[in-house]
Amino acid sequence: MTFEADINAFRGKFLNVNGYCDFVATSIEALYREGESALDEWMADCEEDGIAPFREEEEQKRLTLRVPHHIDSRLTIVARQHSISKNQLIVDVLEREFSAQM
Image (cartoon, rainbow, N blue to C red; front, side, top):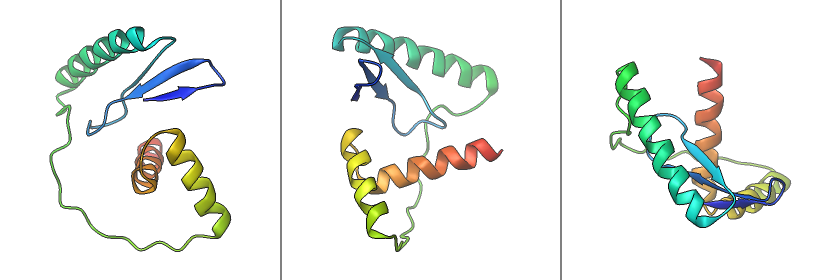
């Protein structure tokens, strides 16, 4: 969960789903309701499309990445804003990029 100051709202995101499932609300209480609704819709869409809604545990591979200092600094800032690790941020960005290309 993060707070998006530009829209004055909280954003939640489900992890370990096959795809991207997020939700937005202006209060924590509403965020819980929106999360339940988003998850229900996600599950229904997956069932309709014949897709497993959650990722199976898969073997993780190690990747060494060299980045310029300014990119590492930005990764740190954005990861903190989203309360995730830099590793998870990089994985999320790659997954979105790969999904957009399909």
